[in-house]
Image (cartoon, rainbow, N blue to C red; front, top):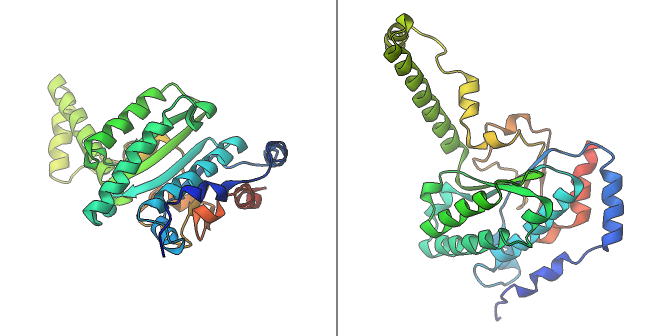
Length: 278
């Protein structure tokens, strides 16, 4: 059987009329709306196989579904949306698959910063979260440009986690906290403050406790740009966090799973996941 390109995937997202949509959203917005929703993007390859799509088409359909979910979220008044787009662990996949995702990512980032994109329509500022040094140069440059051109947007925030894992985020935060604290100690020593050298020597000997505290680490987390999520959604029917927002998810009051984002990216679904908050 010949595989399809997925160009018809956008038909999945035909939906209610604009007037009905705005009426429903107006009713929902009267109740408590989550401040921050986080999505674990998963199941694109599985969806492509089920639909007999060519390799890579699943990610393109997933992108269309994601844009729909973003629009619904921002229309409802959600201020922060975070997407787990690409894990550091994904670099272990076949090189051609990784390259295909990188090429698609570059293409979609450039589309996002188009003047007519959802970002400008809703005044969304973009943050790319993770170890961006691991990205290919074209993708990294596109990400940096997207952050630059949306830096003045202030109505909503979109955080895109790429080359990201929670363990890497926490390790980075601890390293940055240590560097910051040692710089402060050295500045004290250089200024001739009597307690500076004592603190430095005391820390080396293990005599000073709590030199780095919880606040120091949280301040240096990649996700310090957003509050902890209120809802976490995984788009593959799985319930694993897959090393995503482990630090922040301890306080998440609601979690949901979708068998496939492409199949469930509807206003009806986003309404249902908000209903428990009402």
